[in-house]
Image 1 (tube, rainbow, N blue to C red):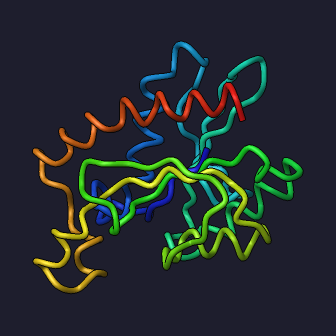
Image 2 (cartoon, rainbow, N blue to C red):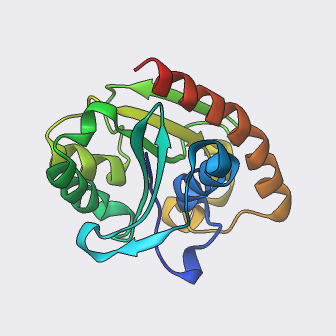
Length: 181
């Protein structure tokens, strides 16, 4: 499972890092159950990596350090090393077209203008993977104007608390597809 976002302190807790925030939540909530360790930066994969074990199989969490729009480079490296990870790939990312506080888990859909997802599709040659789309609020962006500025704004404390409330059911949805791909 890959969480999309941008590396660096200036991007911590921004809307564009919703994917990173989710995989952090998933690891934290699943550490004991699935024997997840901590995050380690793996330069070979251009990502922070955390390994665990789900259903007696290695399960990898990744947070690419390539910046959002180049996420495909890291996924391509993982895909080459682990031989076709896209079969079981779940990509978690922000989605401006979904209302804040909502999520959708879908498979085999287009990038719909999300540059990080476009990068992954280009690198792997397929869109046939799961996507956990985390709503960051189209209506909120429309109030503020510029999309790039909006996605790089930090979540308020209140909004981060609201995110955690959707992360729990999103985690349950992800676990269902892991059990029944």
